[in-house]
Image (cartoon, rainbow, N blue to C red; front, side, top):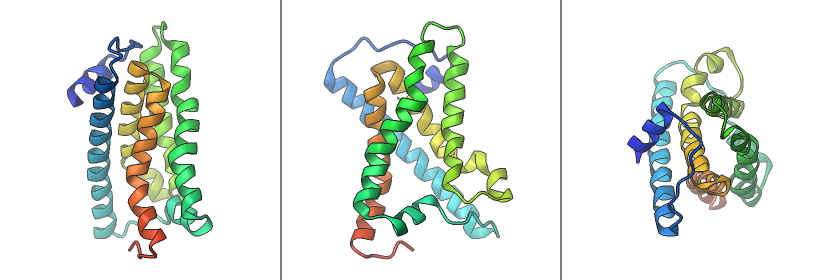
Length: 185
């Protein structure tokens, strides 16, 4: 699956997958989800190691603030339903308007970059954060590629579903610990 996505990234074209079998599409979805999570966890651990072994201070993450201000249910609904639907409508919905354009690859890359760097707002902005922003948003850049790939191949609803599952896989354990009053650190 990773090789298919890498081949696609080399030459992105708006070409829908002609296989409509649900089992096939769910298999692709699960494989993309697994890849996105593995890559994100590896990158996240790298960022954590960098932060713990240096004087780097990334400040408070937006998730910390959300968990202080809102209930677990509100954070879950916002992160797993609202954010995926809105972000996919905003970032990958417009791809259809460029499906027959020779500029599609540039639009695909541009939207992926904007999506990734939009997530720098999850951090307290500082000079250090801005300098490290490519590393800090690398997980979102990677998942943005997967979301763009599945959106073009299967449609916008599949991108929303992948996005929701990805967010749930990352948020779920944190929210479970929070709801059980188990400290996160």
